[in-house]
Image (cartoon, rainbow, N blue to C red; front, side):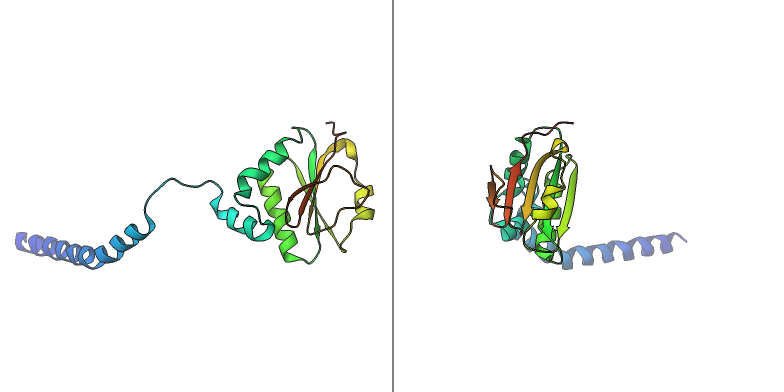
Length: 158
């Protein structure tokens, strides 16, 4: 019975040694290539934002723009309906603007004249246009990058 225990242990130890022997070159080269280092915040969405807006490190810069809107009021995001890049950009903006309340409105055309007049300015801190042209009469436009325009609403109250 004891010899069986030794053979069993020897078998598992040898299998483990073979596993380490075979996997060490693969794991070692992967570790050398990727190197360990500090984790970059929001790295997963930065590449998307660079591709869609052209802003480097947008996940750090955009929240600063939203902080200047104040703490009260929601953020309205306009995106063109059936434009997957614009809708995705609107969702990324919503993610970055958290914990602020976000409302994404999909519009059928390239302008939002009708939809913008239906907004209650007393509840809104700012309006973001993703791949949509803001109306000409809106003032204080802030271009946040390609396809993204922020318009602060100064009358925001809770």
